[in-house]
Length: 173
Image (cartoon, rainbow, N blue to C red):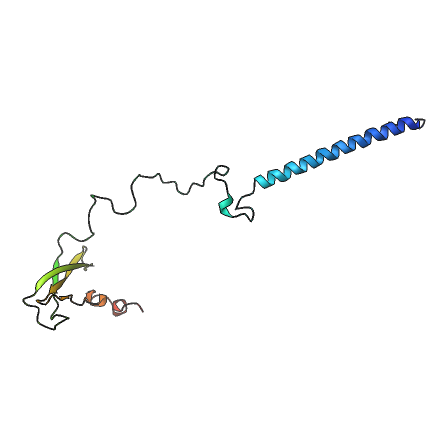
């Protein structure tokens, strides 16, 4: 505290001391501001600034866990040795579809060689419980000239049982 009778030398010394203290506090404040700016810049990444994702450092940011499932070590998709298709072992009905004539030469295909079969199973749910399975076989035939002909498949609405209402039998538009 300054007394009213203090000399001018004492007052000047006190002012110099306060100015030096004020200068030191300003320098410390500027250093803290700079340190705060550096911390903010270090904390910036593509999620909280306009930086591109390629500038993110993977070492500074923990990876996001995407799934709680543990990896099984298997590749995705059908596994080797597992079951084949979902077709029934023994269908209740079998309908064979043969092409009537060769699409190339228009000849009859009675003496033609088979060239393969495409199978399609239709599962119907009859009135009592259980599945009624009909397998449609579309036979490819090769005529003597080498042209392979496939029968035109039935439209899906023709494969539906007659108990299905007409609105459900129409294909979607």
